[in-house]
Amino acid sequence: MKLRVPLLFLLYLIAGQAIAADLFVEAEGFANKGGWVVDQQFMNRMGSPYLMAHGLGMPVQDAVTEVTLPEPGIYYVYVRTYNWTSPWTDKAGPGKFRLSVDGKKCANILGHTGSEWMWQEAGKVNIKKTNVQVVLQDLTGFNGRCDAIYFTTEKGEMPPASVKDLEAFRRKALNLPDIAPSAGAYDLVVTGGGIAGMCAAISAARLGCKVALINDRPILGGNNSSEIRVHLAGRIEAGPYKELGNLLKEFAPERGGNAQPADYYEDEKKERAIANEKNITLFANHRAIAVQMDGKKITSIIIKHIETGEEKKLSAPLFTDCTGDGTIGYLAGADFRMGREGRDEFYESTAPEQPDKMTMGSSVQWYSVDNNKPAAFPSFEYGVTFTEESCEKETMGEWTWETGMFLDQVDDFEQIRDYGMLVVFSNWSFLKNRLKENRTYKNLRLDWVAYIAGKRESRRLLGDYIAKEEDLTKHMVQEDGTATATRAIDLHYPDPENTKYFAGAEFKAIAEFIRIYGYPIPYRCLYSRNIENLFMAGRNISVTHVALGAVRVMRTTAMMGEVVGMAASICKKHDVNPRDVYHDHLEELKSLMREGVGKKGLPNNQRYNEGGTLSEKPVVK
Image (tube, rainbow, N blue to C red):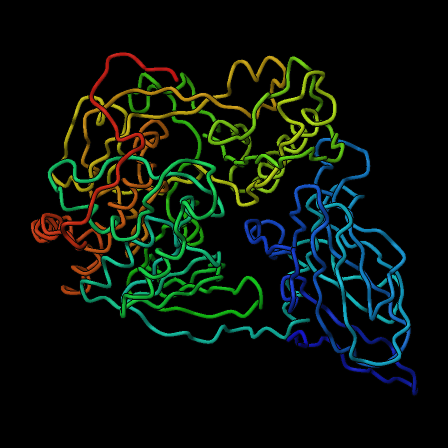
């Protein structure tokens, strides 16, 4: 199979001599990716998805594709890659790989030098026929990464280094149109295929809206997917609208728990739930990269396929941001916050005295399995040193393995995720190779480590109401209350035991709980205060950092999505904006919430962290 990549080349002739011939190849577009995985999490910062060799210390199967070069001849080959351990050590990194062209290995090993995304010289190849096979060969299994490959007949001529300049070069190289073609007009575009986004899409669809659902992974479910593996927490069938949450029962997994085998999360059930809705068009593997505006209204969004690079435009009168990071709101210029408010702004006793940028962190979960015989693991030491006292004597890691609290969960997210993997590999290597008494670990094999990090907090888009600590702890119910939050205020902090050894670079967390009354989240928290046609559902709604601790769990975000879908149907019916539902159609929304859109009579699987009642003192876990 030939790689379908438009060619940036014409053989320019001046005085009868060829100036240059070249070809730009996106690695994520390889026809056969072998054991390499597509990672799109950091497109906003480094410019593109990339292929990564996530082999847990065992080299992954080669990625292979075919390309057509413009002419035979000597080509110099450059690869855009990143030495991912460079933030923590100056030594050569573990992510080594090499490139082969038509069976001939390029001279240079790649991926283990430098300190940023950069073009590295792979070598030169003598091309005798224009159709050639390109192979990415992983050498270590430790997350080597390849963004793009560039062939040129002119030595030293590489694509630009800066992300902005490279984007212009990339668009020209891939012959991407300046104007993305339309992929249709919809009543509602939902961006983000996690639990909240799924519920928003299904709810609106069942109430007569034509819906586009955008998900930047091949698998639905977000944190509850087999790629991240977080259980559903919170309680449904609570508060004044007990039919909310019936929808989630239709595709929620039967089993729970964090960091469990993939089948626990029942990805196929989620996929069927969306596929069975005739009014939903799913755009899987697409990431929203831009919005188009008319004043304070979004008119369309531009989405990009994470493997082919193909761009499309989706138009609608209404949009819902369920991305978690508030991506659509951010691109549209919505008001947002990130970090912790100061104590005096909302009179929150749990808030710090002064505002700061700290957030709850992201988790890279993992587990090991019994190999029934000794299982080796390579030595892995790249800037984080463990000792008999500081190592974590564990066989699996779930939510407590949490990183990035003092970094930017959007701009620094690749480093946050990478540090999460770094400490897992480093600690496991110590347990296997250097711990004096390690009989417990000799037969254990590292079986799964997430490479899609589970994020808790980043941007919070601001609505007409900002829910705060007192609302939850004093049961200050608003007239427009909707889905009921039942989870105790659950805020995470660095684990003091971890701080003893890794101060400033902690990777373990504790949670402090403040019990609450069930709190119906105001509808005014579910739409933007300054972007007229934007809803939000999920952890990016209009709450303070403290209040986020209660509303961010997935059974609660599912009900938010269900409510937003209902409100979108009212907007369509009356040709109004989200704010108008509050002012003019609130009773109609309440009627829909009393009825719900889910199937009735399904069993309620609520086994984990279902919430509690008011407590005067934090409960520390």
